[in-house]
Length: 420
Image (tube, rainbow, N blue to C red; front, side, top):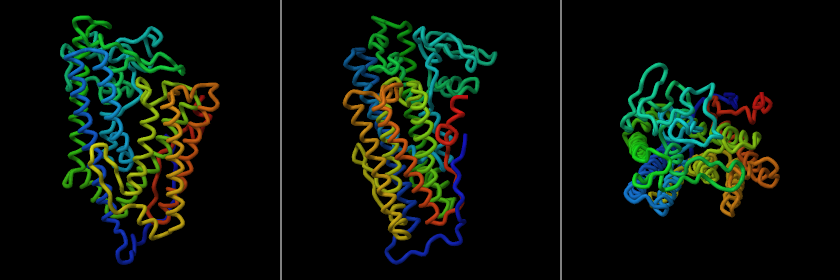
């Protein structure tokens, strides 16, 4: 991946702050507290999702399937706001693929439409269909999948054969099971799996008992993985210790690395601009549920959370405290106002995208070829992210931090390579 490189001045001394000014240690404490709250909320909403899924399994009605889908969407909100913690926090980035890896080759998990194809040069398990097959072969080794358990998913199937699109765990595996494939391309409509796919007495799609096993195992695994990260951000947790070990300058650099990398290479580039260039609905983040506009929106909200030191919890677990914004205001009030203006402009661009989706045009339709108005809404969101990243670069300079490398993307840095 390309790198959005910032050549910056090394710090000779961190800060000389006036009385009552925000201290870097307090900023880092707020940052950790917000992470703890967000992962706790992600865990709580995942447990609510499990309740809804268990009800669907007990009574496989369309109403209960819709309730499980709603619970999945609600569980995504706090999790997506954690993504500004990925870049710079190795403990988060190394773990993140367990819960949010994408894209996924859904034929690994369950039945797919004939249009999906029956083979891939890159993936021997492209149509392995774990739900239909109690034994699988990976690299010449036979895997016993007679019982679908969290251990099977995590240890034998996730990235099986070292293929990144073999995503067997996390939010998107659950999303696929709840919605099924979205076969509408850039036309209206999300996945439309029937509730009878989870009804052994009136089974559609075959292997309903095993589909239930998979759905429940993936949900239990999501909960245990989120418990791991919630514990890591507890006051004496491993993530807090790792952050403290970097010192004040290193900790502030971590915050800015997360903001800049998510803003630029990950969100503006890989998640949005790439799909817009290709007009490809397969490049949207929540592609089965048509919830992508909310995932993107919550990423933007998450960036704001860590900069302003404030988090509004969906379950009342609010946090606010000393912030990076405070430090910038002390060092350069004009830049502080510029940063706020840029972040507000980005939020407005994503609110426009969100409003368009809520009015009936899903994100995959917005990026469709020939949809000039929808394309323009999405491009405006990209432009706002790129613009705010330039201001994040100036924040790094003003705070006199060491060189920081933000994640990049060919779609932004070398667009011609996308089509090679």
